Amino acid sequence: MAGFELVGLVTPTETLAVEGSIREIDRLRKIHGLGRWRKLKGIATVRLPDGHIGPAELHWYEAHGIGKKEMKIKRLLS
Image (cartoon, rainbow, N blue to C red; front, side, top):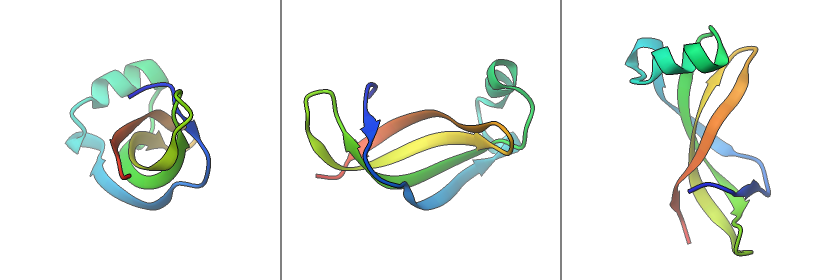
């Protein structure tokens, strides 16, 4: 699901995979650069394009010095 806006902080975060455990590690390094990549998940309040505001489970990739990349909604919680 694309085109959403974060309304609040993302909490709590949980690490799903690190470096070699990430299936798309080669693509991440090619597009965004070298770093210690982690796949994370968390819960946040989001605003969808249709105006709906509610909690959602988010997944994203993150590396030190590069930041959060490719954040997506995995599922809506309400």
